[in-house]
Image (cartoon, rainbow, N blue to C red; front, side, top):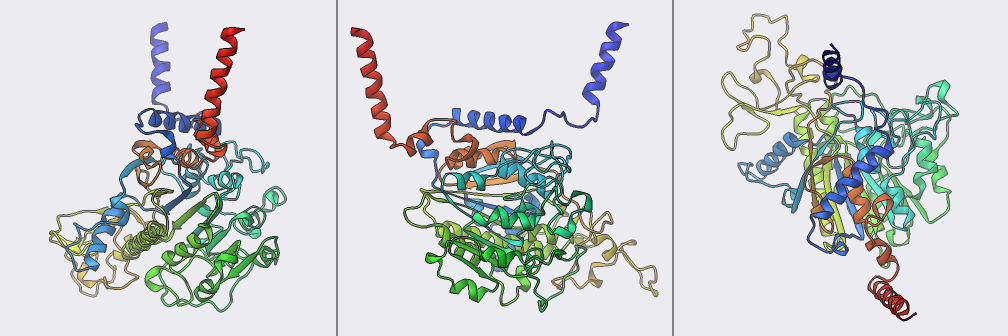
Length: 532
């Protein structure tokens, strides 16, 4: 009887769907990351000094999963009138590749704030948390706060910055400087009354904490209190996302930012950005739209591309005789296009990121700069059927024909569903409109989805991580997503992993000379002991 009872308890324990243990706090995840780093280091065949980088650039493609990358590679080739399958993205040629497990502490399929927190802080967390661990408390803004790789870099004197195609106050970017339990708090008006005075939204936290960045370029005029009433758009894409929030406190945080200490410059057009004397500017803020920037295929004339923003960011960060720099380049518009099932737009945005990666390689020294390219999570894009080699990646396949690229869920369900008022039309595939009836050349064409949702969900499969430069060999195999933060910490001699070995300390204290002096001191001590 006792054995049966114990057996039932064990089976219940193993098969239960309970929430993760409360032990999965930042201390737990920092140990997981550190242990993984030590395991990789034990298998390295080079001296630790060759794993250190002066500079780090990390590129983050929102929703840029493996299917998206494969389709984008083909799309890139077909734009060059190739069959496409043989084409490569710039980072396909990076020497090291790994896979990151993206689940959060409470969800199999994560959101952008929990995945960004994992990468940027080295600690996984729960859904919606912004640089906070699982102890995040809505009534205590200090509880569970985590430091980020940007803060680690600033602490050791590195120059820092980020560029993005989204609002700078949006969840992935806010994770660099803000501490919040709710990723949606971008304006003061977003915070419920009961939490005001406890938490400050990401806009205000950017003013208070983010002012240390040397360069920040992206969107977000509205959430920063500098709303542009005359904003225009060349092309209106269908979207279920709300407009950028507006502040209720009437504060213009941009104006307040310009009055802070240091040589500061604010720009809101491409022309102004290119006119700034970057050699004489210590802090540059560029905000080019009220909300997110336009998609690249419909960019306004005054908006810089991600490639151009990356170029200018590196110019202001990569200064001679500095202690190096850390830069994040994010294209969140890949994710946004996928959420609306806009496959053509999503693939185009991957190519925007690809150009920015190429720019980063060209503008930095290979021997000094670790470059990482990865995604926060994936999206439910499927690549299916039996299309011929060289078939239009945005085209159709099989008979009856259907789209080669489709989505597991999202707004495409209703967009493709046959009208109940057919007016005598016969639909060969019953429930769905024939692909011949769709305006598939439109930039706003929405691809088919199989489950009707207002916006698509994320997906939970592993995402690829590409790396080149010093320390890139540590990116290999399958690992928890927070491991990336530990690699950046170790390679950049900053933050929690800088003490894993003595190399960072030696670098700061004269390197070989200090090592030689230590050896002499040890020899002298042994001689004294021997003859005393």
